[in-house]
Amino acid sequence: MNFNQFSVLGIIINLLVYIIVGMAVYSPLLFGKVWQKNKGLSGEDLAGSGNSLILSTLSGFLAISMLYVIIDLLNYSTPLWGLMIGLIMALFAVATNFNLVVYDKSKGTKNRLRVWLIDSFNTILVYALAGAVFGILL
Image (cartoon, rainbow, N blue to C red):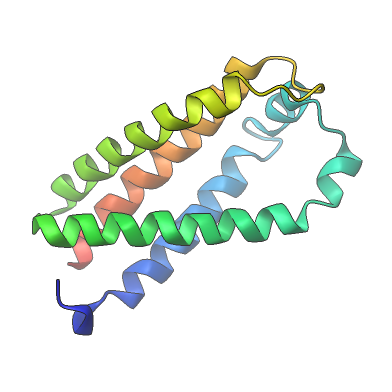
């Protein structure tokens, strides 16, 4: 991997994809109300979640950077290969997140499986789109 050619543009574009997809998936128009209800969160709980958003964005940056490194190391720089590698990474991320969400002992969480499914949908969509974008840019 040649870090002199590190795709800063790809990272920035995919970080925006991460944020926009997350905003859409967790908006009241899609799954926001269902997720909030099943997570047991009130509007007041969400109002003070600035630190969570910062940590989520940092996590997204790290995940997207890892996806970039893997696609670059495998040297599969087509949108289709990027999409497939993104989907494979998403499945690993979703599978490892299953235990964290489903066995969450938080008192407010009502339907952990539904929360996991919504979170998984977001993760799969972000990784697939990010992989395709890297496939185009590499």
